[in-house]
Length: 323
Image 1: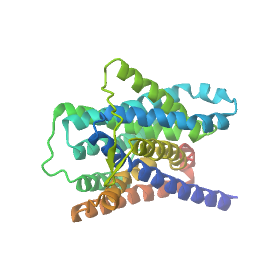
Image 2: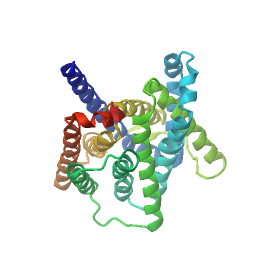
Image 3: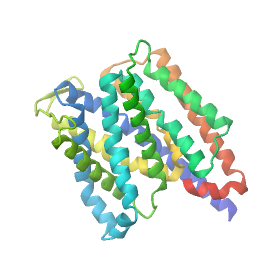
Image 4: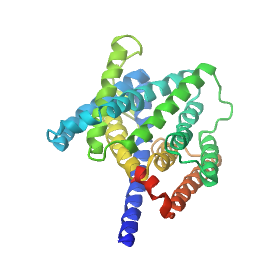
């Protein structure tokens, strides 16, 4: 019985790692799709709003089919879904783009991914999961690697931008924590749909109120060295970088837990560099390759720490949070 439980846990972990890497990879395509729209005159807020709104529309029918009238699942998770849509979807992305207005993209990304450290602190404060030396070492290793990949040499720093970047980090932490803690009877697809619907309403309302600029000219855009219709990158941004990324990310967080899934999420930066290399011919530097190794090492240390935790029967009740 115990052996069967261990085998099940191993399979769940492998599936969770696969989903987490897929989520990171699909999130990593957002820069390639969004950059073509922004270069064509779209405001970042417009790109985010269209991304989230179209994703919510695409997920509507599959989500309704999955729920099959079980609206009580949404009602019982209303606070979580509302917070997810407001903070993890809408606020996180807006804060990041506001940060980019004051900082280089590299510094803004580094600040946003400090959300991984916030997840560790949250698990400590809220659930008593005090980080051990392996987790701390993994966190330091991953952040150093992130800095190397982003190549922060000569990057400008602005206090206002730092504040926005830290707000984006909080939003990212909320994404991982809420993704892992929602009722498992609520399908990840339905969770993503409800959260994006809330996020879309918030973003559209912000645009109508003038809080953000929604400028989206319907012109041909330059994508992968070709002139294409603006619909092409919009579909990619919505289908791949939103629908797949969020749905799979929620599933991964439920299998791995908030801490491990957040560290695996750091590989998004590696995938973004890889896509820039393959699709845009932007060859990564030796420093970026070294940074990638640091990130992988950091994620591995955190995962080893989790496996050590699971090897102690006395700590099994704590693991229920990540099953």
